Image: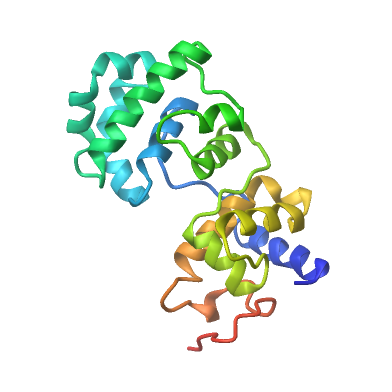
Length: 211
C-alpha cells in the first residue's frame, strides 16, 4: 500500500471513531494486565463478566495474592483455560511485588518476563495504560494487515514490524484499537461486511462482498 494510501486509511478510521477504546473493563494498570492475561483464547465479554465482582475486591497484586489461587479460580472458572490462567495471575502478582514494588512496569522485557504475559499482552498493556506506541497483533489485526495490503506478513511478528514501520506517528496511539475493531465488527474472517467498511476503496482484498 502506498504511503499516501496508508495515511488515508488511518485518517478514515479516525474520522469514523476519533477516540477508540478497548472493550475489556479495568480500573488501573494492574487490573488491565490481569484482564488482558485472562482474555487469551476468550472473548472480552466473557472476561468482563468474570472480572466484574473480582475487580471490586482486588485491584492490586497484594490483594490478589491475599485472595489466593483457589478463590481466584472460582471467579474466573467460566473462562477457558482458567486453571492455567489462575496460576499465572497469582505468580505474576508475586513477581510484581518482588521485582517492581507492586507496580506494573512500562517496560516490554519486564512485562514479558511475567508468567502468562507474552509480547501481545505486553504491547496491549503498554499502549492502553501508558500510551506507548505499540501495536499488539492478534488474529484480527493479522487478518487486516494481510487482507487489506496495509501490512502483509507471514507471521504475527512480521505484520507487527510492518505496521510499526508504515503507521504514521500521528495515528500510532490508537492504531491498535482501530484495527482490532475493524477486524472484529466489519472485516470479519468468514464474511467481511465490505459495504460498511470506511476503507473499502483503499483495500486490496479481491474477494470483497456486496450488498
